[in-house]
Length: 186
Image (cartoon, rainbow, N blue to C red; front, side):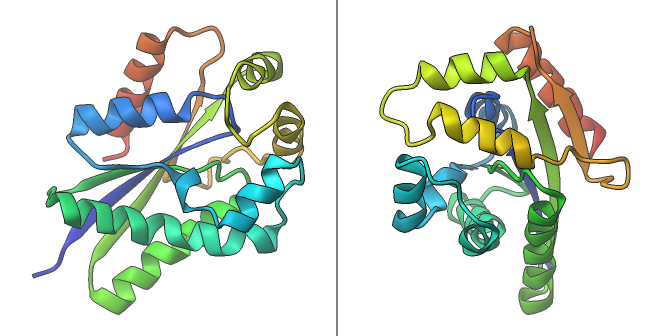
């Protein structure tokens, strides 16, 4: 029997509220949540903690783990369908690597694995304020600026993506928008 998995990638730069939305969706959908940052190698975390932006080569192995680790979390929880993972997924080619990982799992295991992106955006000054207020996190203020420089917002050709500008919205409003987005791409 074929397994069907839908992975929701809550994406966007640091400080957009990815973790808050992912935790809400996880609870609302009764789906496991994987913190994408926890999948980085120690070398990547060290680089970011000292203010060195990751290269595409640094990100490659991390991006390839996103889908497989989320599928493993779904299987471990024995949930029927959904998994939630946070990942900045800032460039289209990063999102494409995640999509390719889902295709690889389909080919290797016969599983139906679909990826959906919930791409969050917020004004730069709000992002910087949020990151400044974080304690004990490796993502520093100057790293947010580097994320914004490389960011490529999803285009209409990325039909598996929903863009949410959450500037000025309360957490409740953001969660409502996120849930509506999930419903729209089921």
